[in-house]
Image 1 (spheres, one colour):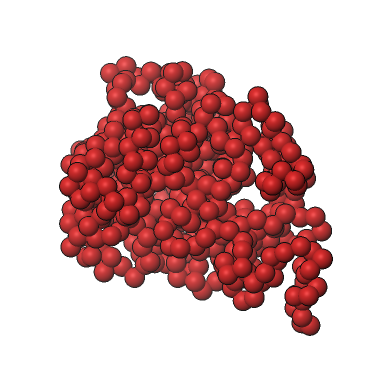
Image 2 (cartoon, helix red, strand yellow; image 1 turned 60 degrees about the vertical axis):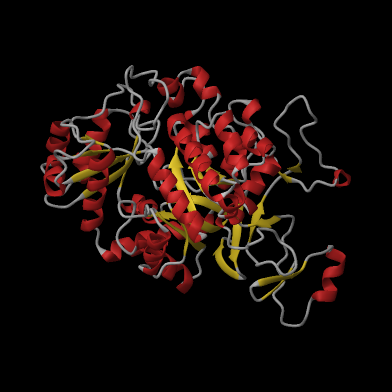
Length: 513
């Protein structure tokens, strides 16, 4: 492959390369390494991800006592302590500490500890008082906050964040993305999701330094084309769409995802809707008329039914072609049933999914089984159904919920807990590369061909094979005559490729060589 400036100029056989090489050119011998288009992570929270590097990482705690010990070791009087990643489903005792216990461990310091899914948190009394959480929807006297109270707690944390700390976090997160072979990220920003001006700062940093590209989404709800224009005029950020984490519901782990039937481990509780069908319809209607992409966070089957109902209403008013041409998208879509899948396909609506969720929580005896029961888990994460229906797919991590790990996501979609829901490794790879660019609608082809942006990654790999998820078929081939380019072997137990270099528009953003 020949790169000139920011573009691919030529791709061809090795024996013809010498004809394209001129004096002074840099020649990089791959020595058997694989070169691919750089990955696209289609759902990230960068500043939050970077803060995990300097905050209190609770992903490894295995009991309420361990969590309290970790807080006690890090808390300082009067200083905000932010922690991330606790998951009571992995605690030996299954118990979340109380606010009283947290106050004692922190010595009265303000503390906010985000659950792994990012849709609830444990807060201390001093932070609750400073943020005015009591009385807000989602407040619990034990200190676990959800919905409005959770959003207010996050905003209080952003208010306490120093500008230099925020900038360091942004840079650290983008560097981590580059090291994972990711050349583009879709940042899901908004009032409670990030500090004020965060999207502008992220894109300015990406423009100024050798870092991945940042495609921006803003979670601002609108009800008219005039409001769309006002929101876009009020920011200097490059905004691909309004929404992203415009939340219709919450998360399964926090029991805030909106379900049609009770949670299996919480009879009488079905989560809750943040937006009803009329609000979703109004946002879709306004964005469609303005020619701007809308995007919604929807996980539970009740939330996804709201999306389908709103799409049907807008299509009836504006017509299917107008609705489809706007390229709207849904984030997560964990519990999309056949009716929802059919509606998304019919109305040209894409989905951005996180296969790592299924890998981490979807297995036998896992969190999803505890929350939903076996039958609903078997119908979750319908990757194959989306692909079969022609619903455009993109993959992401939702970092910091799960880390930057694109090959692990491809493996999870191709070799998951249920073969009936799996897709081929090639389909999964395309969803994590070309699919992300297509969902953003910015014209990037996501492939390496003459004239395309020189955005690629170089990998240490072992065998290159062609893999299918159905074990009844021939699952692999190393024969080039098959006409299907090989990808790394991602079968169970196979090592994941290691990124050696990542390049964005001809600029090296990561180099381990």
